[in-house]
Amino acid sequence: MPVSLTRLDLRGVPVADLAARLPRPPAAASFPSAEVAVIIEEVRVGGDEALRALTKRFDGVELHDLRVPVDEVGTAPERIGADLRVALETAYARILGYHRHEPAPVADYRSDGVTVRHRVHGVDRAGLYAPGGRARYPSTVLMCAAPATVAGVGQLALCVPPGADGKVADETLAAAAIAGIDEVYAVGGAQAIAALAFGTESIAAVDVIAGPGNRYVAEAKRQVSGRVGVPSAFAGPSEVVVVADGSTPVAFAAIDLVVQAEHGPDGLAWLVTWSEALADAVTAEVTRLVEASSRRADLEATLASGGYAVVVDGPAEAMAVANVVAPEHLELLVDDADALLARVRRAGAVFLGPFAPASVGDYLAGPNHVLPTARTARFASALRVDDFRTHLHAVSLDADALARLAPHVVAIAEAEGLPAHAESVRVRGRYVTPASASTPAAPGRWDPESDR
Image 1: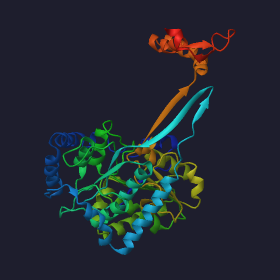
Image 2 (image 1 turned 180 degrees about the horizontal axis):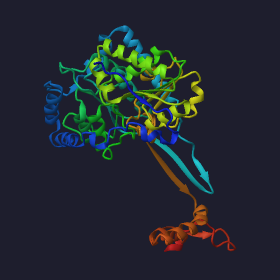
Image 3 (image 1 turned 30 degrees about the horizontal axis):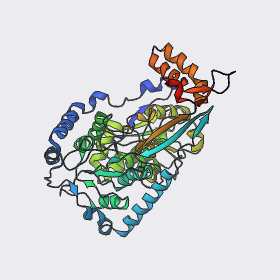
Image 4 (image 1 turned 90 degrees about the horizontal axis):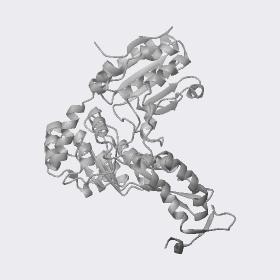
């Protein structure tokens, strides 16, 4: 029997009770924490030898050199079709343009004699991850490289699972070349994340790791977070919630559910509507698309556990459901999408109206397609330039400013029981002479002789 959407009828359920009636995301215990911890430890201890053994175990190929030769990466654009090359170059230019549009560092801040200078630096080295195996993801290479490049990252290292022939696909290598990455390793899975975090003989450790992956990759990033920077979003299996009304073409809603479901298992694809007729029609069309797809197994794996057609009373209830799910992709395929946008509080990316499918966002709308999943949109956002940067502030003040602020520093330090903090401002007072005899509490110029 073909797998399609599971019906969930929530009509008549008050908004306040909707959350309790929805299927819950996988519990933390369902993620492979113990297995991933073993892989990370094997790589930390065994380095390249462990990577080769794990690649043979999980990818079925034996590799001698983990790094893809630089010339193989550099010439990859010549080995792909001209149309794809132009598409990748166009996509990368649009992604770069969007990330360059992100807010610039703020100007220096001055207040009452205190100056705070704001300085921003890209990290020295970033590790990027692009999935492989079930599909090729040159678009992910572009999405990860663009914000890192704008941030001014010094070095970029890309890990990609090898294919059955032990090689990384030319499409992925071409994207790496277009994005200016020549350091590419044919290593995937949790072991790639471990290698990037701890370093091996072939792969130097990085400061930040970014890029989506399956639950093993996502769990590995969670476990190495703290040793390296990992954007707060849990960028795991793909998700979409399509909110639709009676004006939505059935074909639009159905194909957009299939778009995300074809990424493979552990994701979710939800239709939320207040039209029972639309729910029936979309479910039937999804069934037809699944049966005809070359990726039927991946579609059925996703839909079996994460495919739902949710029927609610109206737009308010639909958006309440969407905010509880906090999906990676949220499509508002309704007559007045802008009106519903005001109700969106939790989503990775939102697509408005019938002519803005999530697939455009996947490739070249500009904003990043590395998005929060597993409800982490409650506190996380799309990958951005700041994920590859550190912010420094440098504080300066003169003697007059310190004299004005010193009593407050002393009061707080003494309240906290930290006498050296208080003394650090008192001692500086002994190095200055008063600005005038009538204002002894406001020293004016340095007088080093006074402390001798």
